Amino acid sequence: MYRRLVIFTAFIFSSFTAIGQIYTPVEWSVDLDHLQGDNYKLTFTATIEDGWAVYSQYLESDDGPVATMITYDNEDKLNLVGKSIEKGHRKEGFDALFDMNVIKFTEEYIIEQEVQVSEGTDLSGYLTYMTCDETKCLPPTDVEFSFDLNSQGALEAESSGHDGESSQFGSIEGIEEQEAESSGLLEPVKWNARYEENQDKVLFTANIDPGWHIYSQQMEGDGPIPTEFWIDGEKVTLKEEAVEAVEEKDDFFEGMMVRKLKKKSVFTLDIDDSKGPIEGEIIYMSCDKERCTFPQPIPFSID
Image 1 (cartoon, one colour):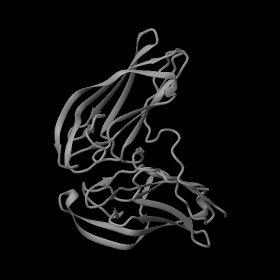
Image 2 (cartoon, rainbow, N blue to C red; image 1 turned 180 degrees about the vertical axis):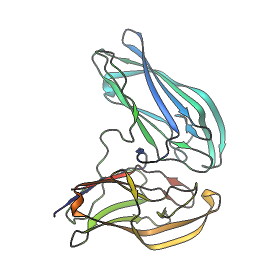
Image 3 (cartoon, rainbow, N blue to C red; image 1 turned 90 degrees about the vertical axis):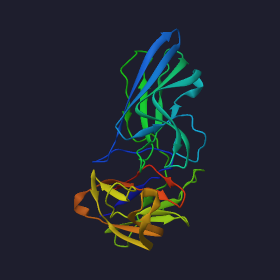
Image 4 (cartoon, rainbow, N blue to C red; image 1 turned 135 degrees about the horizontal axis):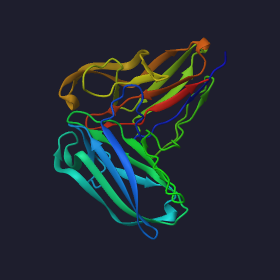
């Protein structure tokens, strides 16, 4: 049976899709209030579990955590009235996780933004945020929102894990190699996939920049995010081979023992033709000696 494999990129400052039993310690709601005329107030409210924090829109540097950011569709048809206001349980100071001063919110984080938009124009977009506890961070997540100003219809907001039109990394049909589109962002890990000659296996390959590593599938405890493969909503463990695999204590995660994969790693998925189309995702994180990145999961499909 001939199958077609499609795999998409996930740029670093993007989103995280909650599937299966993946932990989501932040819940968002989005409300729209009519002020007067064409002016409205958007209110974004995050309810944050104990021990976790979400980072402000206003950070001193891009070298640390991902700042909360609101992206609007149809920006040419709306005006932001003033600077957004942040409320909630605010903490400002040195963050050992990122070795810099940050502004973050615990328990509750509220953003209020006045906008001016003409009636008949949909007000929609997405909010991007990242959440961390004292030892680890989850990949940035997008929360979509949409309001129909014609009808003042109900809010559509959800932690969706993507903005609806994710950037395409490339595709593989048959056993063609995947070619990456440059995003202009830090991308220390490039993924591609190909079939073995008889098409009964798919090889997922992570090409890792010098000085960087990803983490093995075989990880335990509350440390780094292991490399994970999810097939039709269930996590599966694939055969794992690495050019260089190192087991050592990781200073980023309080000296816990971890297995790091460097240079190039190949993960093998056995294909069962009798099961029909396959949908899945690759979840991973990458680190060097100074920082970690939290990319969006990489979705793939095999027809």
